Length: 68
Image (cartoon, rainbow, N blue to C red):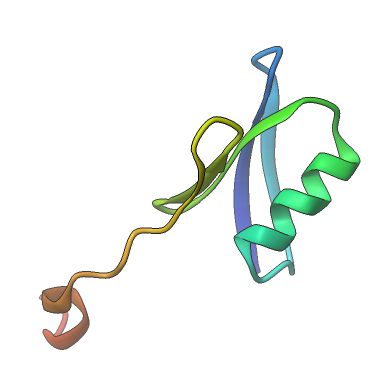
């Protein structure tokens, strides 16, 4: 299960907890369900109406090193 934080153009929004696996699919779903969605976030990745999609690559140190 993943959670997506979304915002609408009138500064409303919420959190959606669901089985949607990708940010892209979540954006499509939220835009169909709610009017005026302008931003959707999942972790550090996000989509916004102004900037489009932005994905943060995991750093090599966090992938290769054991948890502290």
